[in-house]
Image (cartoon, rainbow, N blue to C red; front, side, top):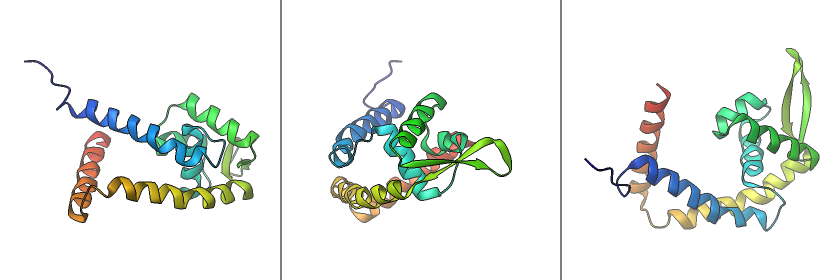
Length: 143
């Protein structure tokens, strides 16, 4: 039995994710100096608020070294601030700075517009089915 990459879901999803990141990156790179990992961390902090590096690895589905480099760069660019965790003085809590919040507010509408253009090929029921399927696959992998 041969594996057909045209129907092998892990391959298809990995390629789709890569292509989407590649096509989407210019949307925020035209207005900022962010890399793809930095964008993902910035937007995770915007959505979920104060966090630590370990949680960001899980939320953004990125490895520790990539997240660490992205966090350092975001701190250097003054988009993120590192605070002492009152519950564990050895650990840091990260949050968007005022500058990071302003950048998020500037980029989010363009991100949503790009997503709308991409999703224009799906009707509402197809979109809801896609989300449901993604949720099921995510849940299966998290069990």
